[in-house]
Length: 330
Image (tube, rainbow, N blue to C red; front, side, top):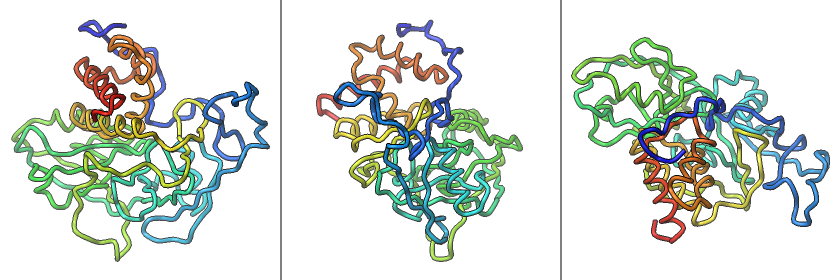
């Protein structure tokens, strides 16, 4: 429906985009990896599943392990399952993955795309900790993201913020409980809202789990990803895109327009909602790239991402960011 005060959350949409829940039955690899479209250039259907290329990725546990080989996954939850199987651990032990580095580098966080030559490092649960924080300001200075499988964690800590003064809280920490309330399985935007709504000038308690670190990885605390990072997704000549609806697809590397637009939309997600989510940003760019006006874009967002109910001002800004990227103004 058009933009305006009557615009509501679409309650009929059940899928959550960035949870990467399996909706289709396809899997990456030999089983049922899809091409970018359902037909090839000659108008023929895709080849049978047993004739499609098998994609194999190499992986290690970030704190140190032998190298494993994984294949046959279509979304993040399945990816974690394959990594867990390779190293004989439980899938919930995996907090998040980084690409091509064992460090807790939020610029290299695995999102919705994996370069075909990328090396996957899995960060697993380490030390649990509980900390009391005095909320002396309205904003805590945290940016929250999630791993696509039920864990919200800290992606960035703003310099000079309330949380910046609490040195035991680090980028990469999984937020397990807020004031005794278990939030495992809660989406990142809900966690960000809960933290924002905590009363000012009051104490609150966080239960956190930090990623396991090897001895040589212990180093000064990082502030997390830079909002305007020039880091590109993947290093291979193509990327495997993990989708919430249907099988994974092999695509070309993102174009300059896509990279600039996704980066700007991700910045807007942080500004408006206190989250960073490149897969969500990429989906919004994909939805908006051929829309002719903001109302058409808003209706398409409702159909694709109805569970989010974005504010009208945010939708206008995203529409403008996509338009700027098309014109090369970002």
